[in-house]
Length: 205
Image (cartoon, one colour):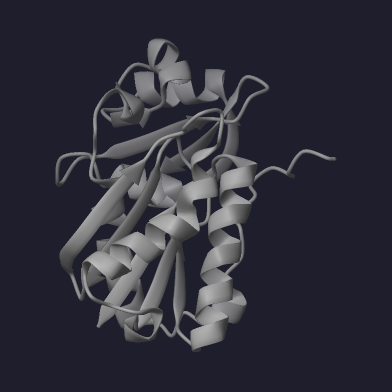
């Protein structure tokens, strides 16, 4: 099974091609010349397919990050994932950025992921569940009273401690591909059911 996955929700764009749980190719794109990285999503997908001598018809499944993250990025990758999956009648799996980031922790770690949600809150992932947007003071108390491996972003790292995923090049595209493969093995992942994960409402206008 050839799986194409992509992520435009976080600070970099990842496009990865896998065969089952083996990675064939992966690319990372950052913002360029005042253009947000999601503007390069389609061209990067075409490039990675061409480099592997594949066409869209050779792909068997799609995977994408559904958020939380940049509202623009969430819309971009879920829309493209649904479009490709609909045209080719493929299964499409959605994975949250919080679950993706949890996998950069050492195995067997008790992981806590917190991403900035503004308004003195963070999107919290704990005990393999998304807990929603939680006030920072509450998260600080959770961290103080337990032994968690804390993963966060640059904005919250100073306040919450732990590691910021933005400070090192983690293989997030490869992680997304492997999570997609596992999800596809366990359910049908109909493209019609693929939706953005907006824990908080997107900004108006």
